[in-house]
Structure formats: structure tokens, C-alpha cells
Length: 183
Ligand code: PRP
Image (cartoon, rainbow, N blue to C red; front, side, top):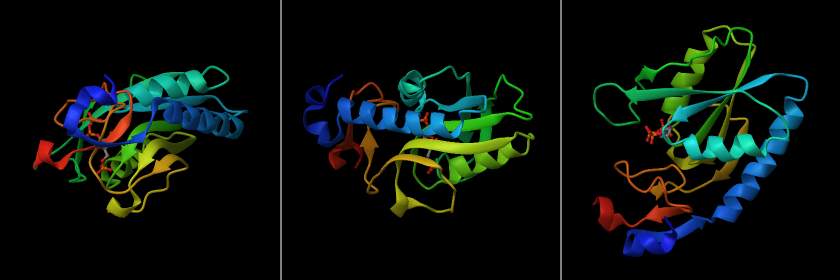
């Protein structure tokens, strides 16, 4: 789906397909340089990270295995509660492995903070984070993110894996959702 198919539901386009691909290629080069002597396992967090994972892994100039985690917030249903439950765990034993978590967005940071701590408890050689987007002004916890595509303002963004009520993940660009859609 293209930006024009959103009609008045999209306020603006933040990043085009080309910009996203260009930045992911830069990140992939950086990551590959850092892990050149190591076997890195890419861990995607479902569902939002699927598109980032698909393009990021193909931008790497060498082979890297992948795995996926699915998580959900407990209780309140708000994704920023910070209490997380694993819906689908990794298939891989990460003991002694170098893990790179691949994410679409870090908002409050609570989800990733929990996931990072959880994975670190399994005895990996290292755990780092690569995210396409980050909202620094929305941060509720300090979290060390080694690779960031773009820092963005705290607006509601959709597309390229990011949803509103499960919709618009298949939008090719990343854009700001018009407030009338969710208010
Ligand atoms: C998004 C995103 C992160 C999380 C970030 O996932 O993929 O996992 O929210 O939010 P936080 O920094 O405030 O914790 P979401 O819960 O929307 O699920 P989804 O990936 O299935 O869209």
C-alpha cells in the first residue's frame, strides 16, 4: 500500500521506501564491521520488526541466522506497562551466542528493556539492539541502543511494519497517522 492509498488518514510521510532502504544498508554495513569476527544471531520481535528484519538481513554482506520472539504486555493492555509476557519464545539456545535484537521502534523503551534483560539472563556472549526508529522524548527507561536508524518526535507513526490497531503495517512508507483516525 502506498501513501496515496491512505487518503486523509496520513498526515505526512516521514521516510520514503528509498530512505528506509538507504539507512538500513548503512546500519547493515556498520553491524557487519562490528561483528566481522563473530557469528551474530539476529532476533526479531514480532510483529512490527518483520519488515525491518527482511530488509536489514538482506543488506548484510554475509550470512546471519535469524530467530523471532513474540511478546505481549500483561494486564492493562497498554504496550508501555513494561511487564511483558512471552507469546513465542526463541527456537535457538543463545548460550554463548552474540545476539542482535532487530526492532522497528523503541517508544518508552520498556519492552526492549525487559527483552534485553530476559535474553541476557540466558548466558549469551552479548546482546545488542538495532532499531530503525526511536522516540527519545518518549523514553521512560534508559536503554543502551547500539544501532539507531532515525530518532523521531513522539507522534503516532505507521507503516513499514508499524500498525494502528493492526492496520497499515503494509504501508510502504513510514508516516504520521492523522489524529482523527485514533481520537
Ligand atoms: C512495538 C514495537 C516494540 C514496542 C515498543 O510493538 O515493535 O516492540 O512497541 O514500545 P515501548 O518502547 O513503549 O515498549 P507492539 O507492542 O506495538 O507490537 P507489534 O510489534 O506487534 O506491533
